[in-house]
Length: 335
Image 1 (cartoon, rainbow, N blue to C red):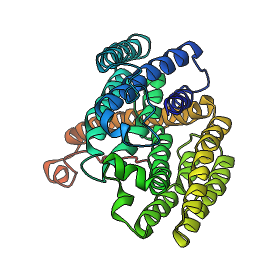
Image 2: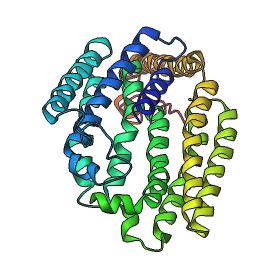
Image 3: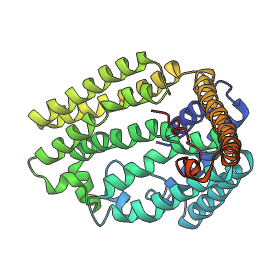
């Protein structure tokens, strides 16, 4: 999962870079993200050492197998977490460092204990997974903007079917470990499969939004739709026939979806000069508005002068028929 976090952060950095990608900044961002992710993962294993020892898929981890001690793990996690955050602050910006530190706290101190308390932990974990691409975008652009939310949204909605499939396949293991997964309270698996299907469908508009918001070309809209329909079909198959085999198939489909989606974003992303054209158009509109304002002011001054002339040339009765203020042109508004 650490490599996945770094890959999403790096993709977010490239998307937020515009036409010129700072490869040194990309490397520093990926390195800092990796360090913070390693810290979060280590703290997770420290807090769940007893739970991991009861599960087949985690009992061979370094802490349950006693290959390293808890003080060693805590020292490592603290050091690498602080170093990664400091690296992002010095080589990227404080916004990226703040997102990294917040995600570390959210993962280790909110998501991890919640896994033993309530099934909502899956949705909290989805938020954790959605932050790294936003971190990368912020590291490159120095801000969080609406078009930078495409990949985080994809990460959020993608994680739900991904983990629902995993939790369904490993229900017995999660029960033995004492985790409150959504699938454990769903004996038939119908609600679990429905949640997976619903969130797969939520991925469909993202390709169009990426095109509409100027992040990618129209080709990505088409390719993303086909890709999302494929994972939705796997989720629908799991909903119709709730077996471990269909859950595994949906799990594998989710593993394929994310790298293909990110690759499509990178291949079809629009160069920054097209965005500059939009900015230039905006500048032209502003310039036009300023010109109109100046013309209006000139007209107002001319009308004032005329009114003064009329004030001197006409008798009081005639003056009373003249408007006491100059006519103001209607304000120009951009539709």
